[in-house]
Image (cartoon, rainbow, N blue to C red; front, side):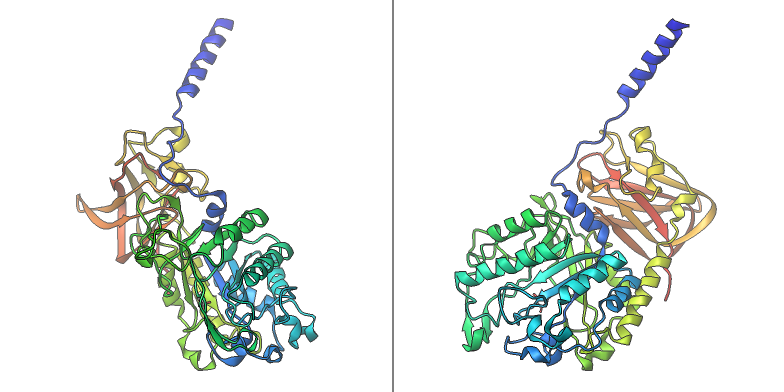
Length: 488
Ligand code: FUL
């Protein structure tokens, strides 16, 4: 008996010890902070300052703080409307180019306490932050480096003040998921009454390395956004979409005649595409206003994007491995206009209904190249991005087959790689078995965190296969899903 027990345990031990280890990581990898950012997918960027009351896009920096008087401002109403739209985070423009700080900063008198808002005792950053915490949305800040109000803009004293502003924002508003730094820099402005033009040297003036070291230290989970990264890159347009092939890895290209890339000084033609085998993991954020402009303008009432347009942008941003950052513009009451609320709600409904049910859950899923039990095809449909299917080391071009008892109808296919091991797949092909033969229905490149394919028309099928066409290493998938797009 003892001997039998010993044999069995030796056998079991040798079986587990030969179990396949995880694939080796490939290329640049995401940090934990970036992995959390990928889960956010859609978030809002709120622009609301005296510029709203001036009906402008860029305040000159000379607006009287008294015009900032949103008598019905209600952060919870705004945040709940965003939540209904499926947004999972909010970035508040705490200071735009006009220099007006929405919190009681020590660095300038040009701030919320000089306005009638809450009788000069308000802190709008706090109100939005608290509403986000209450309704479970992540919170982040945008603090414009360009400041058209500050008299010392252009001197080292301003850079100190800017860093102090960031420190205040990093200290008093809990954990931030993003620190957003726009690229508009220097030019004409009020500058304390000088009404002049100030030019700065983008390469050296702000000392971004020093500033972002502060971000890392004080807010280690905040993703730093700028046109070059560090964590998240600008997609290269403000229309809300990435290129069809958009790699999460990126090596920024210096502007012509420059040897170094610094924010505001790069050749951004590469940004929509990323860089295959780039030096760092820097996925694209696709920013676009819900209306025409970033700020509210009453005359743009009929320029609110429809739920269908938003869903299209979702497919071209999140569905291309990036995120959608939607500009939200409260009106002078301090509320979202009715048409904005309706559109967000419609978008949220399409999202929810479209991705409610993964039809792959009903299929028998097989692959000859499965790496081992721990990497089973079951992991493709368990709704858990931490588990994944993987192929064996030598199987770079595996095939996965989905068999259904009953015919299914779908027009959306969502693929997710297990990105902690890198962006491995170069291209895939998807085919449906029809009348005794495989018929190609889709191809895709650059999978990464998510690749969503919308077919030209719905496919009805009982058998579908996905095969990798090109990959330099064995591959992983944390999800494969088949869905039917819902109409609004
Ligand atoms: C740009 C700014 O110039 C716009 O006003 C807006 O804030 C947009 C999101 O970023 O750099």
